[in-house]
Amino acid sequence: MNNIERISEWLLSANAIVILTGAGMGVDSGLASFRGKDGRWGNLEASEDKSIFEISNPKELAKNPKSGWKMLANRLIEYTFTQPHSGFEILQKWIKKFNLDYFILTSNVDNQFQKAGFDAKKTRELHGSLFHLQCSVPCNKNIWEHNIDLKTIINDIENEKFPTCPSCGNMSRPNVYMFRDATYIANRSKEQEKEFQVFLENNSNKNLLVFEIGSGPHVQSIRKKTRMLGIHHNAKIVRINPNDFKIKAPHIAIDKGALEALQEIDKSVNILGT
Ligand SMILES: [Zn+2]
Image (cartoon, rainbow, N blue to C red):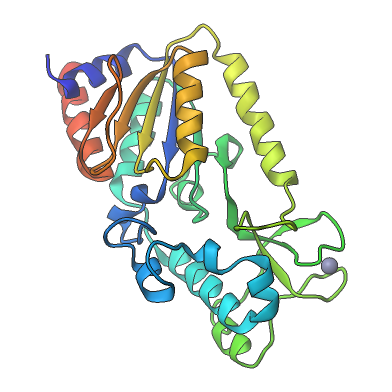
């Protein structure tokens, strides 16, 4: 039995799956991964190997809101008009077909799982969401869904008209956890983490299968969760990553991109599952 067939068997006997994703998950939708060889944002907007959140930290945003907000707005526009690739559909199909409980943990701030139709209540965004805003001061702990007009935002920013906090009128900022970030409001993250803990309680002593997709070793927030699930919840782990794929048996590594790997597993599932 090869690895793909073994994963299919794991899927058939699983009760629940945890999907952990990093920037690599978005590559097949046309989104850039920050740090990979093709890290477009890194190359365009900063020196090598820096993500938007490293350049665009709260201090920088306050000092230079024009360039900071322009980057953020361009990202928001890109994510809004991106169509999630069919790997998202494959995951949804498995969840339905095998009647699986599920939870998503992602370091991406791009709203793609919600856009693909996954339950927002079953999603933990470890670095926050670009689609939610908070006060930059902050004057209170409110977090709200962005109401930015994407047609006018770039022009508005050019004219130094930035999104503001409805409570105090100061500039707002995305509820994204940036580097050197002392003003991030964590209420939404804490709520999501609570939901994840409930999921783990509900699925203790059950067959838990983990798909870690497109998250490299530099994003420790994801890999830590993967390790935790393997050690404390006896989960079987499938690591999908074209570059940093190593993982110890009995877990399985697939050295491919997200979509290609999911399609291959799906083919095998279709043969075994019928
Ligand atoms: Zn405010």
